[in-house]
Amino acid sequence: MTDYDRRTTVRLFRERLQALINDLGDSQAAFARRIGIDRSTLSQLLSGHDDRLPRADTVAAVAQTCQVSADWLLGLSQETAAEEAIVGPPLEIATGAADPANDRLRAWHAEAAGYKVRYAPTTLPDLLKTEAVNRYEFGDSRGLSLQAAERGAFDRLAYSRRPENDVEIVSSIQSLESFARGEGIWRGLAAAERREQIERIAQLTDELYPTLRWFLFDARERYAPPVTIFGPLRAVLYAGEVYFVFNSRDHIRLLTEHFDSLIRSAVIHPPEIPSFATGLLRGL
Image (tube, rainbow, N blue to C red; front, side, top):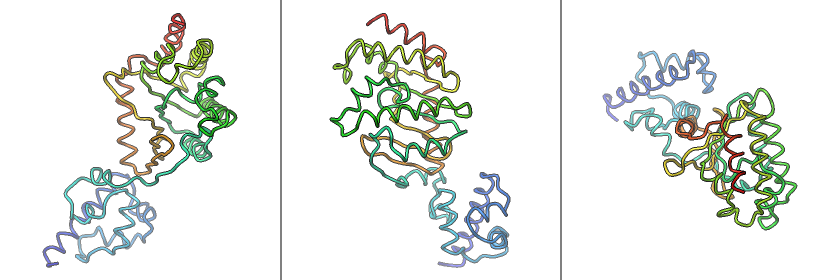
């Protein structure tokens, strides 16, 4: 590396490091603590009077803490930090997502207390399901007990009833209409059990509003992957019995922005859900 290349690298690192500190709103002391280095070391990196390359462990600490790539920090990539970060692998790939009483999911909900939790269900929202629907959907054929499904639904409902919690749900209007008509996967569920479920939806969405807010969008225009976003802490994307856990701020931000766009495009809003559900009963 020539002297010019080294100085350029050091300058770009300094500028991008300062930009990260500004984005976080940290003081130099707070940022130094965040990445685990001395404040004096950070001051030297930002001073502009030293053209030595930063230590590899310092670059790694900044990249890992701020969820950006080392290449971007060192000026080896001209992509923005967010674009660079998103191409990396998810932090974790785990199994067991089909279990509604998964201990890890319960822990994540507990950690997110006080934050807004955003949720796009695979079918119906777990916390609103009746025992009959849980029995139908999470039967022994999937290796899950009714007790496990009921425990998961109970936990979610109890969580949403806590006054400090804030839950938003999005799903398509067609998914709820198909349930009411007994179409698709619901073809084997008796009309009486579908009626009971819709009555429960009308009751609970009225009782829990505004702590719980359910938005319905038009599936001909939009799509929501099954996902739960635990405030700024993590986002969990479901793919059958495997799920992807994102802890990077850029992944969480992008998924949150997509979720918010679904809310903006909603055709049925939370105060309208009880009456909409009641209207579906007339077709049963």
